[in-house]
Length: 143
Length: 143
DNA sequence: ACCAATCGTTGGTGTGACCCTACAATAAGG
DNA sequence: CCTTATTGTAGGGTCACACCAACGATTGGT
Image (cartoon, rainbow over all chains, first blue to last red; front, side, top):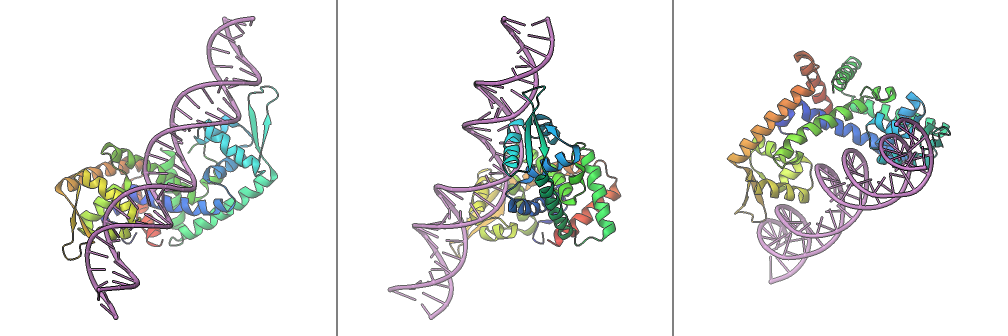
């Protein structure tokens, strides 16, 4: 930061990468406290926002490989945060749904992430924070 | 992005993490074309901006472990981008300096990164881009 | 002259993310 | 029925990054 080469500081890609890394690391700390990783939170959030998913659809939506999703759901299931139920109509498919414990865990994680937001964005006033959000959303929407 | 859970989109930490990941990945593609990784570029930039460094100081400045810096400098040296010279006054120390080939490589990489910036920030007008830079700098300065 | 500290180096460990293959169970189509 | 496709699963490999322990060479202090 202070010591970062000006050549790099002139690059928005560098600034984004660095800020993102910091944000990611801080959230990861809270997740680790629950024995989880980033993808676990993404899965919980997706289930909360969009409802139960066929496991493969969940993977596709989040852009993760099927085989990796298996392990994520394994771990969430073992923690009691999600439930797997075989589709009776198509016994190949597995429906993944959020348990009450999973909802509670997600609430905790979102609250933690909110704290991370606050600490990360401390130097910005509310208007600047809103501006930052808008700009980032524009960027993500276009990619 | 489009499919991302609103619960996550509400978190700036998530937006930053995601934008940063995208930026990082795109720059990494260009670096890989030269057989380099992100730290290599950081080292080249630091040498260009601050001049030759004792190897350990370079590691400290960039916040990387001494032992990892050894390998980075090894590879840059093998590529002919930096030069190691023992300090005659203190033969434990090694000075790392940029070669002309290293300067040229850095120019290429910075130019590539500029292209990444443009593609990443395409949805933003010049004023918005400047705003984003300012906000990110504020965040990084405080962390 | 000796001791402690520093520096580069070697080598190993762990982790998260990503990607790919193969397979058994099951389903759907001709 | 038989073939083809899908789904979850198991297992493997790679890669970048981070961190740590130990060692030889060298230096500086005393």
